[in-house]
Amino acid sequence: MYKDAENLPHALSSFEEIMNTIGGRKTLLILDYDGTLSPIVSDPKDAVLADGIEEILTQLPQKIPVAVISGRDRADVEQKVGLEQLIYAGSHGLDMAGPDGLDIPEKVSAEIQDSLREAARNLEEKLKNVKGCMVEFKKFAIAVHFRNVAENEVAVVEQAVLEELEKHKQLKKGTGKKILELKPAIDWHKGKAVNWLFGALELSDESGIPIFIGDDVTDEDAFVAIQGRGIGILVGTHGQKTAATYALKSTEEVREFLNSFYRALPQGKKN
Image 1 (cartoon, rainbow, N blue to C red):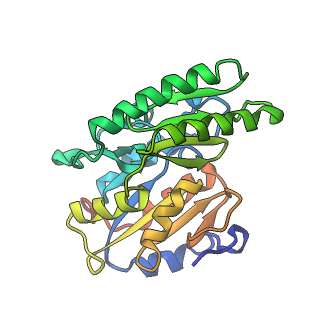
Image 2: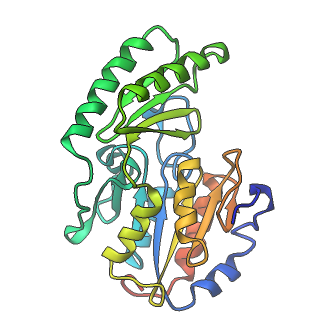
């Protein structure tokens, strides 16, 4: 099920194989944001679409449904991409909406949201003197960024997060590239979000196929969910084994793949 990233076939070199796998089925294209559509940067606020990505994201929804699923708040990623015709999901798919009234049911209780607010306040106080650490309170999660924290202080950040999780049994730990998260302890992740969206768009394995492109550990849930019935593409590496099917090296290659994919799709509205 899992492979080393360096052993994955390259998605551009394998493009004909990918298109043969899709066949005549309708494609649901799902994209991560940071590290996929935008290069990873020191400050998440500075993450913007890579060159050429906006243009191809404007074109693709003319042929197929396109979703962006991020750990960011939905409003944040929606503002950064800025295209109305896309489906947007924040908090790893807990908050999703799109054209034609698409809206995922509420899954996070008021009690869990109270726990998130309290944990965010506590972490901001505990970590205020750790240089480079940023506590980001999102709608359904807390992200503790330590990319700019000195190596000898990373353990301080990790300990603070663990202590807070001990206080709030309704929250669970999440990890990513130089980030720790406190998330609702419910059975939901990007993989379940992809499956829900696939069904909400009235697609089946006979009529449709999901393609998920992402770069981080949190994207593995999606790769696992579609393995054997869809196409997972890992961008770069996150240092662990992956359930993805193919690989791309960078956001530039993501743009190249998306452009080739758009050209290969049949003409007409959402194939």
